[in-house]
Structures are given as structure tokens and as C-alpha cells.
Length: 153
Image (spheres, rainbow, N blue to C red):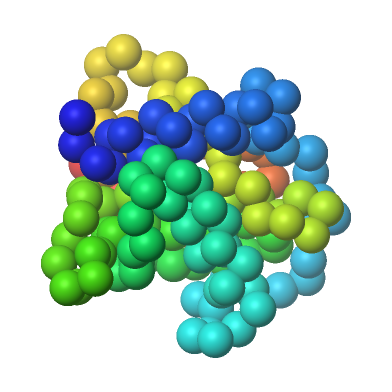
């Protein structure tokens, strides 16, 4: 199994257990901020990346760095797409898109696989279509569309 798929499956289990089986956690009061990419070294960036590391290192057993390909945060929601890199800075897996929500001061990874209920959409969050992103917003009310990557299909 590809490391990324292993990680996605593990994070599905971890997130589902953490938030009680619902695809999206309890709503946190919306922060009054603008869409942004957190600065390197900021507490916000560290909190989001720490949430990813906690799940990834549990799944792979390795310490990795993440190459960030897309990273937008707005009103307590974040969409990030990373590629895990090994100690030699070589990709250890495939792209790993993640949606996170700030709940009670902690960044929680949302199970993007569970959101994909369209049997014809085989890629879901890996290459999100406009239809898939609308489904994310339906399942997770309050997710601002300005954090999403531009749909390629």
C-alpha cells in the first residue's frame, strides 16, 4: 500500500474516533480574519503542521518534513496539501490534502475520505473537483471556499 494511502486510512480512523464519527467537528466561533497562509514559525502554522505530524508519524513511524504545496486558513478552517519528505528531502509519499478545523483551541483533521460519497469520483480530495468541494461545504457548514485549491476538473 502506498504510504499516503496508509496515512489517509489511519487519519480517517483517528479523526473519526476523535470527533465521534461525524465528518466535521463542533463549530468553533468564527475568527474575524482574512484568508491567509500562516507565516513560517507562527503558532498557527505550527499547530496545523503538528496535527498532521501527529497522525503521519503514528502511521509511518518516521519523522518527516512536509513540503507545503497549498496552505490557506480562514475563520478557524484550514486546507493544506503537503508532500511528506524523508530525511534526504525526497518524497516519502504522495500529496496529502487535508482539511482542518479549529475546535476548542486544537486543530482537528476532518475525514475527507468519508465526505466523498460520490462513487464516480475516485480521487475525491486528491484532486478535488468543484462538485467535491461543494460537497465538503455541505457536510461541513462554515468552511470558507476561499481556502480551497482551485479545482482542476
